[in-house]
Image (cartoon, rainbow, N blue to C red; front, top):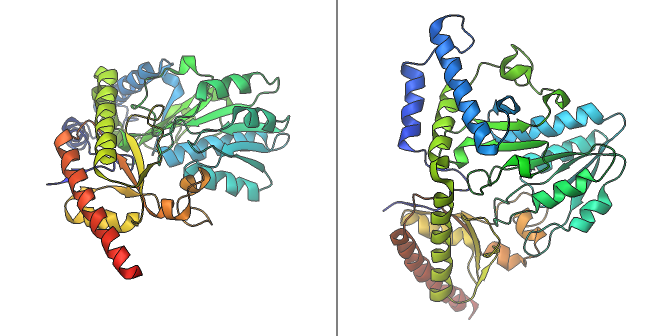
Length: 386
């Protein structure tokens, strides 16, 4: 049995997505910029996909720009705002729990003379809105805050952040990394005061190596890549047709009944949470169950190293993630450090991330195996201490 519970890392593409990718290699292989009919037909389909994505967000299709994924989108947006404002406004605000694609980008800009403010978070991963408001100055050009954290699943108050930023007379741009939110939260951008947004295809059952940016005002954007003028001259380079076709199909399937999909995943996460809590003693839930995103559950197992447990589960075909990836000078996950977990709690953390492809039977089997291994590891640990 193969049980995949690491959907925040990547997702299995839908079969229909694979079919679309194959179609782009076999029949629709023409360059969309070509002057003949075959190229025009590919361009026409890309326009249709762009329009459909725009509809899912309630925006104009010209504001959707295809990229290679979340990392490129984050870099392009942050560096664009920095370049356009560096002479007068050189202050950027972000949070301690951002993805490295944001944190490492702003650190790079700090080396170029930008002032960076890193907002702390509480034990649930939430920023302090008062701290945010007090951090904005007349030199602030950008606030970059993720919608959903990829490790613990907390949802940041994006609407309220936008309202705070809007109160300032001098324009402050607002960027949202929505890689873990798009397709997991039902939202429309008209309800949010967001200037830029980043999305990645492979988190929503699409291909890897493709994603998109939302740019509210394309006149306020300096391209990271220049060349042949593709993507409204905002992201040059021949379009990744296989990726765009696949992502388009994934979004079409996902948004056919988004609410039902979200509800199904949330029900599975609740089932996993209750099963773990009922069957295994001395665990700590690091995810805000009531207010967190539907698909992520982060749990620390006392007296157990997450990496050891991960490899035991792998032997049974169960795939999860640990919370111990070193992405800061502190030991372990920068996110779990930021929410104040003790070192042993960080070492014992496992992230489960679900999709609608998972089943309750898979969860039952997973919890059974976790219970067995946790008891064994704890017993061996106690014997070693004697």
